[in-house]
Length: 115
Image 1 (cartoon, one colour):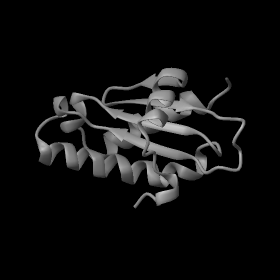
Image 2 (cartoon, rainbow, N blue to C red; image 1 turned 30 degrees about the vertical axis):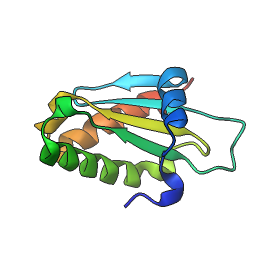
Image 3 (cartoon, rainbow, N blue to C red; image 1 turned 135 degrees about the vertical axis):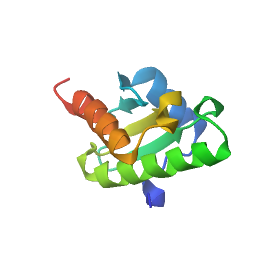
């Protein structure tokens, strides 16, 4: 479970991360990461976007749960104070958990590499 202090909740935070952050796409997900150097004491926060193009409510909830589990394990790797949005693409509905892990890891390694 993603701790409450690490969840993105406000639409302004989502908007800022998507518009101002760096983006890395893979087959099943697109990850947006906004590093905020002015708030290094804040915890890294993560939000998810799983829209109706992914599938019905059952599929969307399954994808959301899987992505949340993947990102919970990756929290220590994220820079302090950063905002991360993980957007599920329609192909995430048919992706296995291992494929989602590989896609998220690939996107994060690109984003967390040298600026």
